[in-house]
Length: 210
Image 1: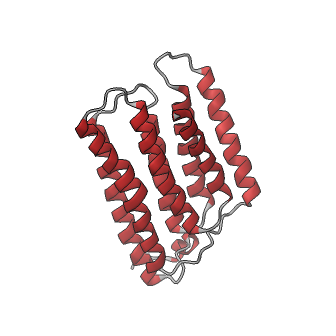
Image 2: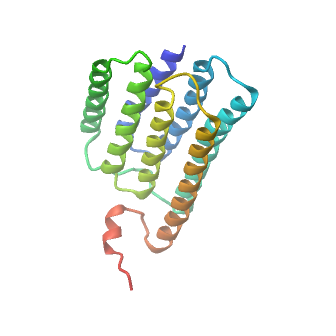
Image 3: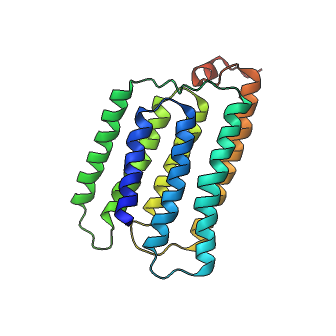
């Protein structure tokens, strides 16, 4: 069942590469949050109550509910158009994401480490590099925030790649780091929305320090 969830996670990367609606990106991030909880819950063999509560807070409450709702608020607050305006076509984006997944599969198979869970390693690197590509290939600032959150999901999966234990402090640190980052970026984004009619990264070149 864990492998099925991870495959669905990979499919979500392909789907987001060809999507143009901002609301679709938000829904994919919410889906990935639920998937991460399911994968982590089944991956951990000996799970304590506190660890389960922490995982639920980090994945379901934070990743799947709070962050998508916050991003949806930003979209409505700044009256952003529904189109993400990628630099490349959907077909090229799909080809690039497919190449990323294939390269990570080859890289994972070249690593001979019995402690490394290869499927987690593949999903984590694919998500990380897809998030980087997502940031580089989209024009709107809010899509850059979503790309950053996608990268963080990849880091989360990567923490499971080397074993089936996840320290509570590491989880808490990741959750607080992302929460602070989203809040800061949200405040920054709201300020830009007050200045520019459409929060396009190209318009940042027009900003000057007086």
